[in-house]
Image (cartoon, rainbow, N blue to C red; front, side, top):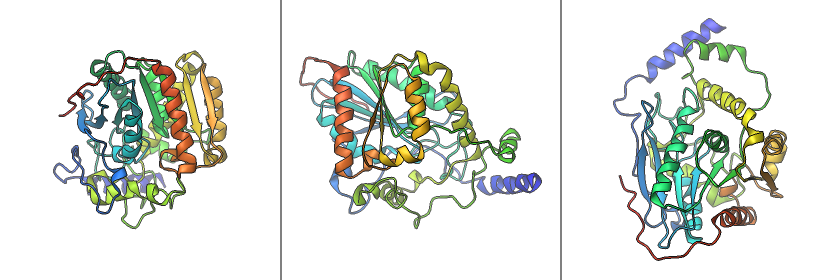
Length: 349
């Protein structure tokens, strides 16, 4: 069985070779036809690329307020998401007086790829993601000195947020929105052997590439909202470079390793933390989320009665209290800063 898997892996790698710059960074995206303006980029939105050592460049975006920002919110996307999915939330947070930065994950969204095909979510580990958060946070300090930094991590972006703060990323607060962590399920020995053999770039499951006929976030029951549930699929349909399918064996191994690595530092992590979960998460991931929050020194859980895994894309009955909880947490950390009308900084490339 392992020999057949190795052969299939080699054939897959050969098929993925070539393609010129198909794995390059993609910055400017096209607005999908018929997409409501509330899902467009906030006013003044600018893209940038962040290069960490020899790793592929990661795409980020930023939008500022016309007043002195009361705080800066750094959003870390979940698996498969591009920054465009967070435009509505960025606009809402800008309106509340916060600058918003969205950092896409390594090898995802408009970021440069480690391997081809482009829609395969692969990284050798999560270290580049963690280093990128620390680097971008230092850029944020230079952009708006004195404005507190709040890191908001969604899904496995929450795992990266914890790891980055444990490793020294400057942040006055952490918001974990439906965070994802590896459970205690046994590791598949065959897949682990493939990773050790240097075949971590193989897809974790076959036939999991992006498909135009594939389900959107609502069909996957990540949200109950028809319009918000279709946003991510709309951006990916209009912009092929944003398309994401399933993860690689290496990505899953990195996810497990990062989940294990944060455990020793949880009890001494003094950063105030808000963990937001929906009703669906408490059924699927509630046990591990509860354990992580209880292990943290200053974590406060906030469970919404209903809602799927993508709380930022939920119906207003869920999203409004979710956004209010985010705003309240940020505002407490921001305190009272003098409000001045300023020119938004130039974050262009």
